Image (cartoon, rainbow, N blue to C red):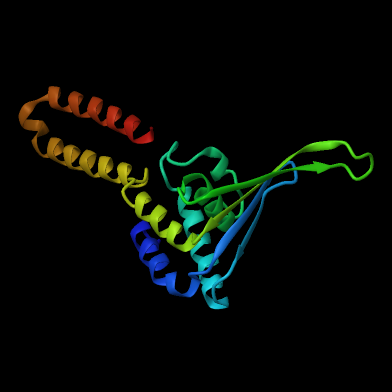
Length: 182
């Protein structure tokens, strides 16, 4: 699987083909819509592909790293666009409009508009920032490896130190196994 650092490099490599690109956002009572536009056709296709990969990767981050609202977005590329909206300092809020019911003219609620200029550069920056966040997948492997080493040592030396080591090993193993599940 691609790392955040690799995604950062791939987004950086894409900057020349997408320098005039932007994403227009619309959300609120009318639903959420994303309108990426600009750049070359190949650059746009590559950006959407990388965005989908980054959106998939967001699910690997520890809880609380990104808002649950972002992780609730089903389409991976749109999940990434939403992460950019929430975490990019270059996102600009535009107008607020109102949605009207065409049948009776009553106000249904607000529709918010915004834009993100240069989403490729914003994607590279966010990927770089996320590259420093350890994933939960990394932690259990380290704990398991340490637990295996401890158990091997105790098996090798357990007879020499008696039943106290065996009991200690079992207790330690249970505690570490419970910690790995958290």
